[in-house]
Length: 137
Image (cartoon, rainbow, N blue to C red):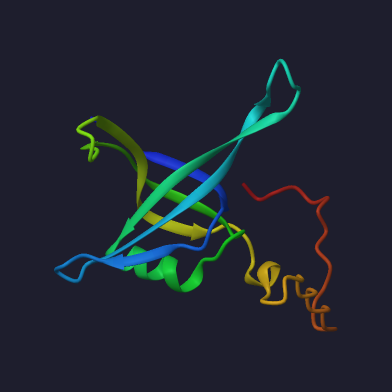
């Protein structure tokens, strides 16, 4: 069987970290992932808001280094959980259980003041690259 999910999008809220009774870290957040096509009626692209769950070291990483608005890539598996509400109704929750979460943008794009830091000016020690040459492979 194969259950692999890879998505890239922006974090919609600051990740929330909790710990189980046995001390295992678990972090959750939502990821906004745009669709590649436009709606026939409105002509607009729609966005899916996907719940993501991270465990252990990945949860610690997410809670320390990721914030609302960051572009990330998530690799994991799709999981559907069944639970019962207080009223006795059965419900289902679909979420991505992340094995790995990768940065999709530069940290300077998310400075604390909300403004992107300017890229450093190149020093005189670099030469331009000639893109016209054939590749060696």
